Structures are given as structure tokens and as C-alpha cells.
Length: 265
Image (tube, rainbow, N blue to C red; front, side, top):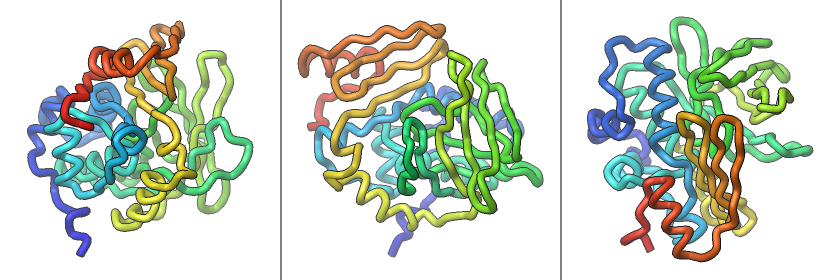
């Protein structure tokens, strides 16, 4: 009944071309890191179908592939991390989904509403994510209490919270350590995310139905849209402007995120 969630990527080579990445010479951490970084730079985190066009979000691998790889679109965690997990499996990596809760900017315990990825390299586990619309490691981070990793000039940290949960944090440009999310390493099944996707993409209480989120990493920083504000970060300098109207919004989507709105509404 749920086989559509577990299908292989229809065309691995097309996916790699979308990431501007060559086929693997070795299935090691270096190649995994390059895939994660390219994914964050080339494929946009966005919730346009949810917030603006009120379209259902399919977690079928063929549907996500059509949207993201062939259609030049982005998506959110339940789409992007699902498709990327399948790509890694098809390449030969040992990976599985994990449950996460986003804690960044929150002073309360939020529900589990995020999908991450656990990769097994040798006998060590690593956390990976290409579907978070904010600061996220541009590579795999070793899951070890007290571990820190510098990836593309950014410092990320892992610490154990308790017997089950781990905390991922980062050092901000101001030198402050900021928690991003919590995750656990017990394997999950793709089918486990159907209900979470349904809530996040349809419930009026979901942040994704309430406001527009668009984010992409760049070689020198990031670009994002939150509600009606466009933000560009380059070499630590932040420039923001309020988007004036619908025409300007679509122009920014096209010029800065490579997304054409034609035929989407």
C-alpha cells in the first residue's frame, strides 16, 4: 500500500546533475559532505505549494523527483530529506530517517515536526540534513557527545541530552552557541512521516500554512524570504528589504532562487 514511499530514485544521474555533482569515486564522508553542501546550495527549501498554492504534498519518491529534479523546484523537510535519503541509499550509503524537533528560537519543548537523516560510515553515526530552512551543517556531523565540526567556516556541535536525545547546535557569527534541533538515532520508516506531513502541510496551526519560508545556501552566505521580507547574507553582512508586491516577489523567486512561478498556480 505504501510502496510509493520506498521506490528508488527514477534517475540517479539526473539527480546528480541537478546537484552539479559528479558520480562517486568513493562512498566516503568527503563525497557525502559534497552532496549535502551542493544540495543546500542548488535545491531551495520552500513551502510555496503549501502556503501560496494550497496543493497537497506527496511523499512519493517519483512525485518528489518530478517536482524537485525535473521541475526545478524545492520543497520542505519531508520532501527533500526523503528524496535525498533515497539517493544516498541508491548510491550505496547506509542511511535511515530520524525524528527531530526544532528548538531554535524556542523557550519551550516543541513537538516532533522535522525529518532528518542518520548515516552510518564504518561504525560511526552521522547526522545529515538538506531539508531545514535555516542554518544547518553543510556536511555530515559525527554523533558523539562533545563533538565539534567546522564545515565551510561554520562551527557545529553535538551533545547528548539524555539516554535517547541528542542536541545539534552551532556557533553564530556573534560567537554565541545556539541550539538548532534535537534528534534521536532510532531508525524510522518513511511511512512514519505521513501524518506529520499531513499536519504540517494542511493544519491552520502549522507555521508552514501561515507564512512563506524560502531559503537557500550560497557560496558566501544565504538568501531567504520569510513572510514579505527578503534577506541576503554575504560574508557576514546582512541586507534586508520588504517585498513591495506580488510582481516583485515572483521576480525575486526567479532571480535569486531560480524558481519560475509560471504554471504553478
